[in-house]
Image (cartoon, rainbow, N blue to C red; front, side):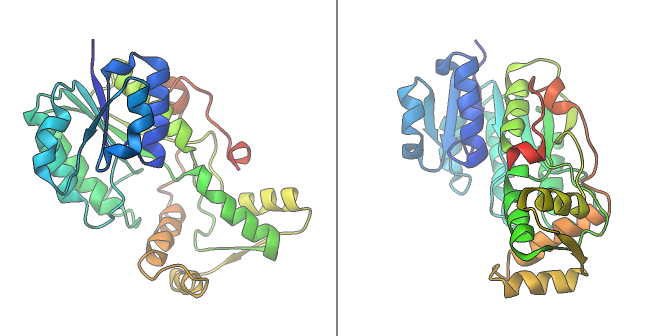
Length: 281
């Protein structure tokens, strides 16, 4: 019996993966990892193995990965300070005998991509390739689930402010990302593959404005600004200074065409029909 494990299993994506795993395979073959295992008590009650895994405490990792055949490494949320912990997890997994690691990355993690998360993901992908362990990169697009605020703003104000220009983003739901992750963990033939995990179409700001107008019954226009003005607007609206530039960088990535690719990975690997953005919100 193949044993599969999931790091960050108490997070939003991790829980969706855990739910799908427990519905798809023997719970005894599922290992769910978290810095705080108590948050996974309900899964332990269903028969899953629950273990502590704290990337900032490497001494927790050998026991966490013991007996695991395949691992889903969900990237942590400490942007700019997560590479060391993720690399430590890869090294510990290799030492424990894990044979295949899937990692949640980002589309086109290349130097020219201005998205603020790219350096972390590129470094982790490089470390995973260099580890000698079989790998799969799950390059998840931006989450469709997080776009309801954009539509709500458009409906409330009659405008959607963007720095993405005419760039498009192939928003994907977390649930669809979870389906792909489980497809890799339980399936065969995914080693050495980098999958762009996307929704069924790419959306521009104008497309979002049209959807907001349809939902609200009022005209919604797009206001295009540069990156500096967009960041300032976010800060003025109460977004923390450390978060605003990151959000701005995603608009810049869309403007540069780094988020527009649409694939059939959700259907082909995840085995589900990709969820349209308009159905996710």
